[in-house]
Image 1 (spheres, helix red, strand yellow):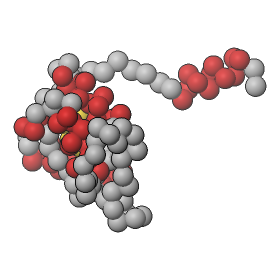
Image 2 (tube, rainbow, N blue to C red):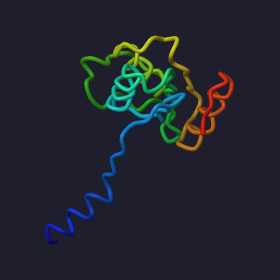
Image 3 (cartoon, rainbow, N blue to C red):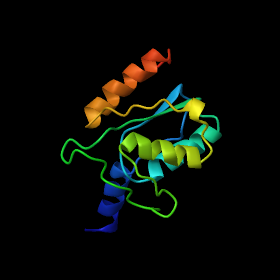
Image 4 (cartoon, rainbow, N blue to C red):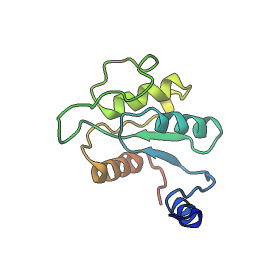
Length: 127
């Protein structure tokens, strides 16, 4: 492949937008701390007053898959993706009052629908 092709593919795959203020940040479940760490940064910078860490257990394994990185920092006994993300958020200075936990979803579509329900219950405007 020539350099132009590689550059075009890179530009297509890696789109970067500037963050915008929102009512809530939604974090679909996972086991890497990078997502909740970034959400904590955005929260601290005033981009949103609430964060919804979402995720129960894997529908494939029936359990949380385990912390992927920084196991020395995030060393809890996490039952769900949500519990792990919540711990990351708390350890990165997000107050518990700003966290709306959604710990029942088992796959991405449920992350979205159950997080939306949690946001609606709090009266948050989600577009």
